[in-house]
Length: 493
Image (cartoon, rainbow, N blue to C red; front, side, top):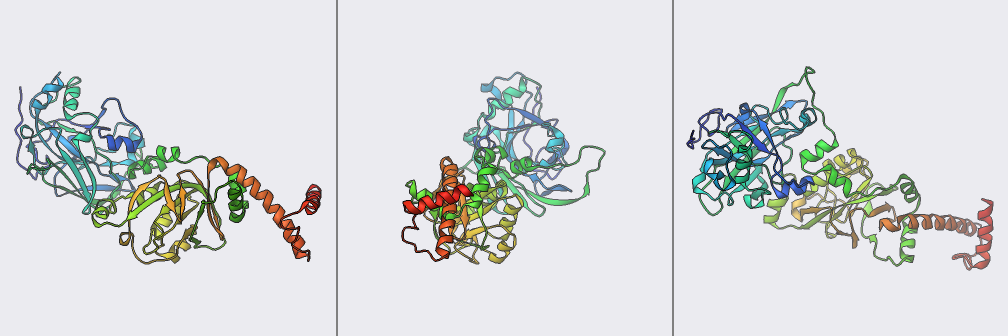
């Protein structure tokens, strides 16, 4: 039976291994946090192969090819096979593992459509599997006690442990050994937790695997993203991206966005665009809904009208340690602005604190590009004039030059929030104009819109009578005599 001894870190193309592995097998979904993010939970593990030429070393680079945009990292625990394994039982599987180390399973989402699930091109690029820098002897550890962490430009963006795996590490070894021989030096990439996202040229990604509370660690695996100068040619499939690939690359599944976004018909949207907020508010009040106004916000574009379904973002008060863990990287705020759909309204809970910006021009541009109907925030807006110049209607408490971290930590999305004194649920209908913003429960929207339009016609007729010099008494509201005159006028129309 062949054996593999853990080697010391090496600068060669084999990373910390003493030679290139014969096989690299990667697990698709393995962490519960990632499964929740993807919106699917596999009953059994599934796998794909990566070429051994994709191995990279700590301190190396990974290239994003010219003409592509969606290069994403995945911090992972890598297993290095030490002895030949074939038809191994789970309780004996760990005996065939020589070492564990840190890995980064880079992938180019621009080529996923071309691969149709194989990941040959999207994950097989040179340097797309950096390992190291060191190895942890498998005999020294409990495989259920490992932790993996990932940093991007110094911000912690991934942290999970093997306790969060859907399948134990032993199962991967045992399962794979049923299908083919695992040989000394082969590497198994055991999947990534939630937090994987897109990186850009100049970004530095760091991954570490360790055993918390001990000195056992792989060391920190550093990889710098660079910009390639060569594009793919038409001798094969070319890079192609769509909103679904962008959403999954950035870390927000498009399916989840669609599920959380009730359909607003064009007919109902048209009615709500015609109905004034004051009229809608009156109809809501008639039905006992007195706490549906988002108070204290004004439009950055006077005369604009906002109608759409709510996507929500919750900020909590700034606390330095929480901002360090949740404020950097691809945080909740950025994820929402990257996944907002056409016709949706982003509603931000900032606790009425206008002492900091809750969005700026870059996020406004992204929301505008994706077709968002607008943004409602009970906080401040940074780059106020630049945000207005994007054409995106934003209702806020006004401008403020400070960045997010002065007052807020982006915490959660698509949850119930309190904005301007009103509770807003994902999928609620939001309507705003110069008079303010109201929240309409979807089940009442058609009824409220119809009633508001009827009242609007009536009020317009009353205003016309008053404009002709008639007294208000008996006319506003209509007494029986004036009601009869109004209904007679309506019939003629």
